[in-house]
Length: 303
Image 1 (cartoon, one colour):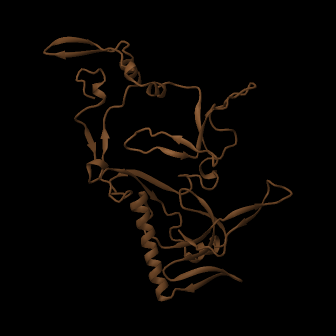
Image 2 (cartoon, rainbow, N blue to C red):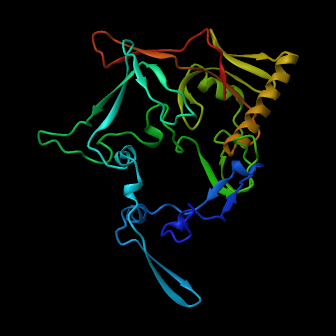
Image 3 (spheres, rainbow, N blue to C red):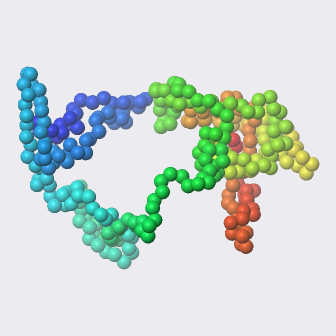
């Protein structure tokens, strides 16, 4: 942009604000420049009503600008034109097209391009069919949504904006973030009691994304609780297992706090969960779920 009298000069300011948001290098910043007005840009190119008014020394100056479309090459004009068709790119092993570089001197030609292009028209609704916007009847949302769908309604919590120094891209954020505090729904409940209710049962992990899994054990600082032939068995930790429990609990608490802005509080109990591997359905009734597979040879996920 070199014409100081351009009607769209304000789209390209020389001075602008950079939002560093905890970054160290200027090229990492978010540049705050105005959004381009589509209609003004087209009017400036076409020369239609492209009039700018400038106040200088109290005087009103009116400038008229000529059309600029004729300065574009035929390819550039075609690129700026709306079309009824899209282009479909298809890999073709038998093709051997010579693709000329779009920027000679910077990019080489492609002498044996294995891709062919075809015009593609988006399908249209016909036969009296109308597109209905919104959710269909019977869709599940929130806590009743399908496994894997993020939901903030599966755990009691409260949230507030706060300075929490959340680290997402290797740098602590200096701005405020939405911080979620998980409320302990099992306050003062013994681990043995929780294990009796949860071990062997279906649950969901990776909150809030809710991947389905099966609880195989619970651990606290003293014992690991697993299903036995006569109920839940409590096995005392070996010295190394106790150290491992403390490391895992601190890692879980710190990871959720610094990475996701989720405050879990002190981790007193760790649930060992096997993620769901797949489902099998009855060959007679294809829609009936008959079996859920939890791989025994897969590493347990702690949560």
